[in-house]
Image (tube, rainbow, N blue to C red; front, side):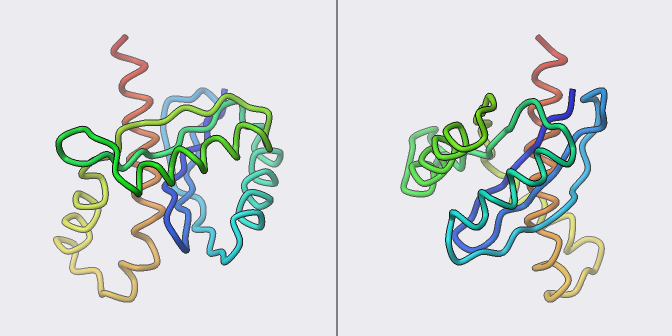
Length: 138
């Protein structure tokens, strides 16, 4: 069962996918967009291409667990995906994933330009790995 992981942002969406057994995650794309409808069309194409059965969206909760504006935006995005894709869409708490990705890239001496290019994809991969690990521990 292939699962798609998404790290939504205002201008870019990081995209990751599991292997066919749903055991490992790898980043596959960063969708740059100006209109959310265009981004959803690309996501729909990816879902068809990889035969995705479920979508996981990162939920950027505040550190105290409350929902701020970014979390509200992620919820609205997830609702649009549910309607457009006709697939199960779940949300995963993604607190600290972006900070973890940034720290990893800095340790690897990745340049600022290259960090920008891969940060969203790596964050989507971490979100998907969080989901996989949570499912395996239940």
